[in-house]
Every structure is written in C-alpha cells, then in structure tokens.
Image (cartoon, rainbow, N blue to C red; front, side):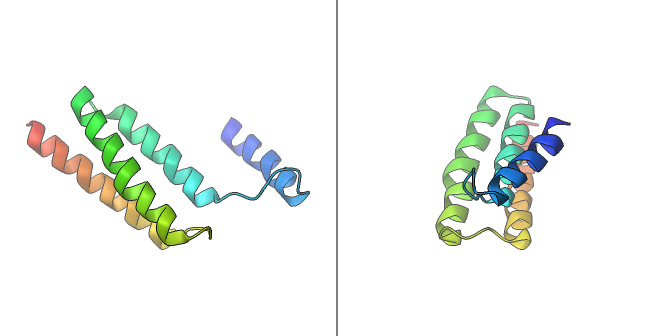
Length: 94
C-alpha cells in the first residue's frame, strides 16, 4: 500500500523539482530482484542469485541505459533472465 501512496507522493515531489528524477523501471527491477533473492530456499542459492543479479543483470542494464530510463522490453528481458537463473538453480538443487 505504501508503495502506491509513496509513489504518488514522490512523483509530485519530482514534478515540483524537490526530488531529482529517477528511473522508476530500474527501481521496480531492483525491488523485484530483492524479493526474488530473499524468497529463494537455500542460502547458497540466494548468494548466487544476488551476485548474478547485481553484477550481471543490473550492472549491464545501467551501463546500457547510459543515464536514460530503461524500456519495458529491457525490464521484461531482465526479469526473464532472472527467472531462468532461478529455474536453473532449482533444477541443480534437485
């Protein structure tokens, strides 16, 4: 609930230039990564997912965006890669 209300408040503050503009898609992806990593069953799997997401997915996306907002396609592709990594880890842990 706060994400919705806080999101509205922050958009007003950005529009009035009290807060700097930020890439909302990237913020959503970072939250998604955090939720996925913490929900994984094993500690080793969480470490691997965190490293992969931080050093491969997010770093690469930030570099490619060059300060511009990421697109919906880039967001969807990053999420797809994360899901594939989770499926692979789950398969390896079986």
